Image (cartoon, rainbow, N blue to C red; front, side, top):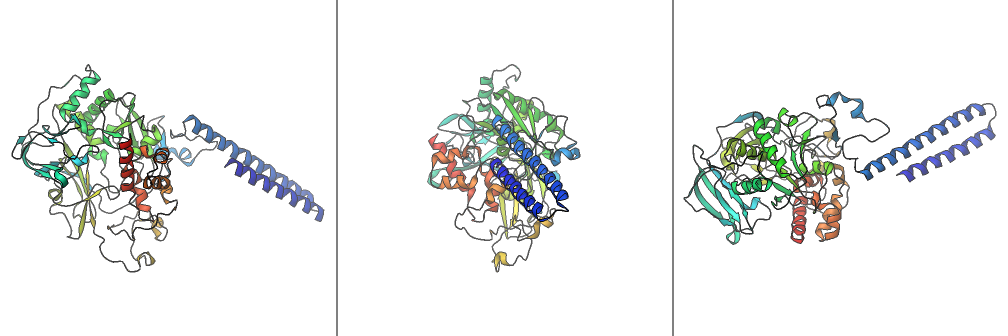
Length: 543
């Protein structure tokens, strides 16, 4: 970049010099004025060239020193955010913001009203072994049909790793141990009691207990599966001490739950959960906050390093925040948790009970009343949306529209789900497709004048508006990926099983949600999340 800028400047100077000579030979009256003017222009261009070279050298030095990702503007000139600081006036004094430019916000109709309905908790709940990456398909089940269990009682454990216990989210009667293909355990279904009963624990003293004792208690209590490990998004390895633990307190995905609203009134439990995690981390617990505004519970958290982020989706993804704070690799893994997982761990130590309650956002324009409901992990989907659907031609998604999974009314929420999205099925043929843009739709393409209406909220359906095509290089992924990663080259390396290129191109830093937006903008209609998971599983087997 420096070489190109310098070369262009010298070519322009040479051109001006030749023009000056020619003008001086052809005219005598106005030569002096032209001469002075061209000398001024040449001096100005030289100054610009020097400043541009200095600017580039400053960026290169900051990158080599590893300080270019702190959110500080390492530049000779101030940026717009530094000039107009009024936008972030609510931030604490001295707080730095990592401003992410690449990405895209998909604004959909059907945002949940910020009122929690506690009357739709549901009656049946399930724990599904396939929600946990790396667990054997046939774990050791410790209960049978008809058994009575309390919230926190063990349901199964992995035969390859029996120390990690997976426990019941609610108390009640075991209705069924449902099996899938090849006799694998699909889900363990519990009919919940009207009044919740909790398993009792002998709590360790958090202030005086050793880290080893704390780990042992979390394993035995059933709270350990709340902690995931990157790379691979698997249940955390209790044999390692991670240098960093990351928690993102905001979600920028379409119609995502507002964690600042969910955590209201639960500040003590959240802080207790952070205290537990501080005991587990080798270095720091990192809390990612939105620069546009965050709950006082998050902003006032103690014993953690708070990092502010701004920008479009996927700025709220924990993987993106890790990349700009402390990147990971296979030899330097990190642990990650969601806000509601931290609350469960905090309540375990604050109240002495395993509380798997969850606030779930019911979203989407196909709902009569999008709202929040208070339920428990693994709730039945049909019970949560009963009587709330506008019609029958609806697809239910467990999660958001980008990274969620299609579900049905007789299915159950996955272990980490906190959102259900109801969308209209896009199963009708669209005449001439994009050639006749008859209705507004979420898109990054300039074919539709969406950019003229930045606040317009769309009614989306599931139509992909095209079929899978040749996987061509378009540069679309890089425009929405706020990480120093080349996703298109990475995907092609995964498809050909090129282990060295996969590792070199940063596969260990990614999870499916990080490439979901790339999949949305993909002209080739490639299943990027599926491809990435296949690559991660390949690398996990090789590790």
